Image 1 (cartoon, rainbow, N blue to C red):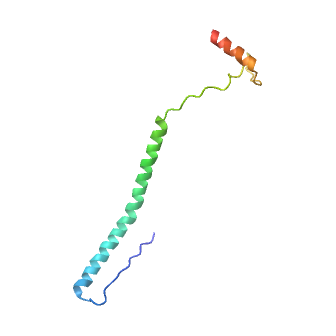
Image 2 (tube, rainbow, N blue to C red; image 1 turned 180 degrees about the horizontal axis):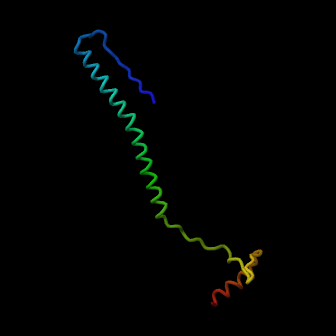
Image 3 (cartoon, rainbow, N blue to C red; image 1 turned 90 degrees about the vertical axis):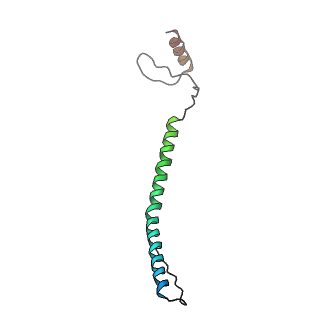
Length: 100
């Protein structure tokens, strides 16, 4: 990052006291510029950290609505082989589960 300092002087007033005032003003402005170069990015990092932690907190506490299933679970036979979906077999398996 490049800091550019522009010094404007009044050519009609070239007294010694105005020269020392302009030097101190330049020093103050350069100091403020250096502090600003460091402070602005740090402020951005703190804002990013704050927003990120708020997003994580909101996501962790958000309640997910339960969705009703569209169809019954697939029938899985005693051989543990998953076959094609068959609605009548799935209904039969649901009836067996509700009896138990």
